Image 1 (cartoon, helix red, strand yellow):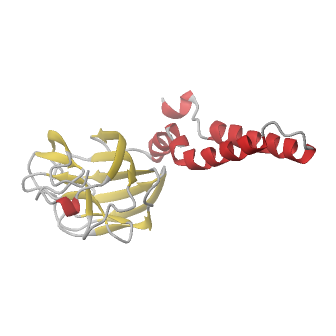
Image 2 (cartoon, one colour):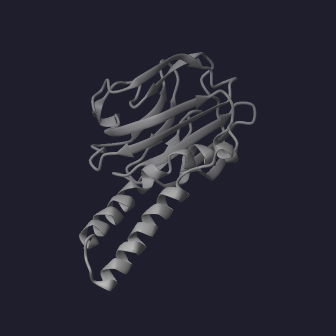
Image 3 (cartoon, helix red, strand yellow):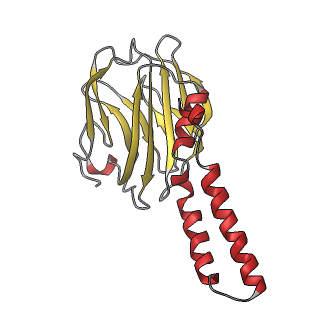
Length: 212
């Protein structure tokens, strides 16, 4: 809602100085989510720092150890995308994942805040509307471990269809304009659009083994 108090709070869940973790979510930012500065997705409260933020150039970054490290790929506005950030407390390593794929791994300098802190989802600890998310967030997951690449891929593919909904809606709309036609070419095109839609849905559905 782009309000200074627009957040979820996970109480006393993390000491990043000693505990490894992974945080994941599906998120769809509104096209006008930025007003000025960065958007804060995952943030430690109190003396803690920003776990994951989004820059106006659409690169994610972290300030967990009082130094900025960036995801080398960009995300998108106004469409669903999946993001994961992981932290290995013993190795001092951050990983960024976008849509099920590991983008980059960073060996970081500095130290994470040594204390158990709440984690805020959606805004900065210093409440300000400018830094809050405007959009939708779903399937938030928090793990006190560094997830594997296979887990990241399975989390994405479990709901991959969400990212393909606009394409699917377009195929359905095109098929509706052809429905009922007696023209052979239109009938063939309708069959093709229907097959494309079925393939899109099939390829977006993971098997039970993928998500076990």
